[in-house]
Length: 216
Image 1 (tube, rainbow, N blue to C red):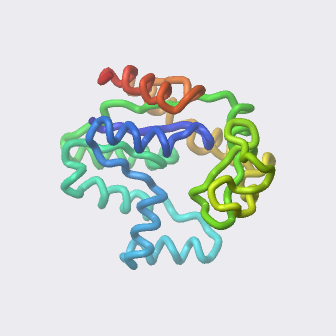
Image 2 (cartoon, rainbow, N blue to C red):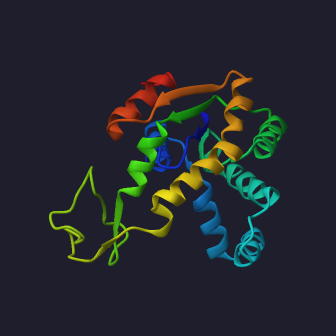
Image 3 (cartoon, one colour):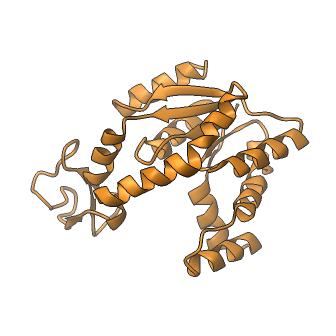
């Protein structure tokens, strides 16, 4: 299957993408991973992306599109893929359509993770990360540490990242509504969008997604 995963920040896209890709035996292609891999490997695209990022500018669509194209052409993606973070806007969606058309391929579905905005703010703004190990993640409501501000695992200090503050989360949601949400209408016109609720336990959301994709 060839799937695009969309949803606002805090909808759990990364978690669901990894689980769905594993269940469907297809690679999870994440824009963040692509950028990190290209930059760390010093590829031409990575150097281009880094030059924009170092200058504090957004990486142009054409660089992102080329990275995604290069990844989708790799052997493990021949039988399908799950795209997470790409396309991020309508021009990228149009470019993806052109890429697939050139290979006589098409998308099977666009999975839209829907979640109330206030739940997104609560999910992200309540997150606390361990300074010793960022893999140790807690939440003031859903997974509170035994001692306030102290990591249960290693005793490190827990803190809130700057981009997890309520103001920053609301700004990220604004950007999502302006830039990314229009791709849902773009794909709806192609009758590709499947919308599910991203609220509730992780395993329930995964089961919902599998069922919506017709592969449960």
